[in-house]
Image (cartoon, rainbow, N blue to C red; front, side, top):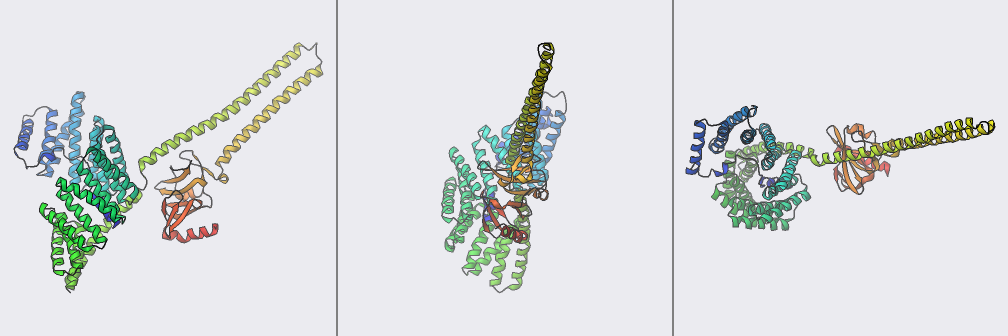
Length: 602
């Protein structure tokens, strides 16, 4: 239920992506105003005016006509792209013209990406959106760059790649902050919150949803406020906090009613019905489901109608009204098949199977149950694929790379300081030696000049004392160098519980390591430094890195090795809580090995 609620919350988010720019104007299916624009654009094309005008005209026409034929958008955008590419390759094209062609090219690439997006060809859509992003970066169009990044992030979400989606949403958010676009900032914050909610990272999901809500309130954008309030309600509902969930659902519903947002009202009513059903208040749940169904029928929302019919049918079957339940389940399944949407077909076929079973029609009930199994497995496969990708996205790439760069810089400074200290010691010693030799030579020369006034014995005694001093200084220098080398070797020595990371040069005390996680060709080392948790990557395998660690480290999972001295408690048989409050998994195959290791250390 928790995952389902988080997914629903995500779907309710308004994602500000790059869509054909003029699509919003097409409200009257080519009424007089739109037709006038179409005629004007066709006139520009027929007169074969300048290439800059032609490219812009093809883009403009594509973004109007696509509403009646999606393939038109791609065909006309390709014409615009061809004109722009041809002129951008000419050395004679002026800077002003290049700017115009790049604007047309960016729009054309975005439009073609949108066509592939609609048709479900995500790799191709990503390719074109990224090409559009590159052109927009050349133009320096910050608003366009942010919108393109949102489009790319949304596609990564559809692929289940949360790490890439977060990376692009954060980059987009940074640009939106620079240009002061608070509505777009709020939308990006909400999208980020939805990703964290879908990963069951409740604290971060709530943080970003609340930041989104605060920003919508600041600009008094009530539609956005209603959406964020509803999403917060979904999070609390998934956590079992019915009081808070109802509070936010009601606030959201009130705003939607004031705005006349019927689709949003139906969604909120359905969410509240679902919450009351989980609370066991079936009669109240039925009232909310029925109110939602009425509105969805009124606005012709087939997807919503099928869901509401199934909700009402499920409650009426539980109350013993088999006839009504059958009517609802049958209608729900018919619409679900029309939409060809597996999750709704799954739910409707399951309900109809139960209804037919209640009527003792076991043959038909079995057919419906078989359909339910097929749809269930199809949905489950998609959810597993997404879950695998989301698990791989546990750490945010951009933040980790920034930390790595900072740590490499710090370690380079540290190594430079050690090298400088060695040079100072050696240089100082060489200076002393040079001075001693100089004095020795000078004294020899003076002794020769004063040979008549001194005895040979006194002269030799003086020279001997100076040589003794030089030898003493050399011995001291040698001892200092040995001490310095010993300190460096001690830092590198495994016996000292310190290891040197090859990728960064960082000298790390293994006692401060919480755990090591395998990530493809790297390991991620999480440790505490000056009362804060930090992480650094090392290019090696987990298997090889384990060889450097002392006996306190135990493998608990194929991807995790933990420092047993940094375990706070055992949350369950398969979960550990580390001293930095992170929850780590223990795989079933490692439980016995881990328990044995703990007993040996006890």
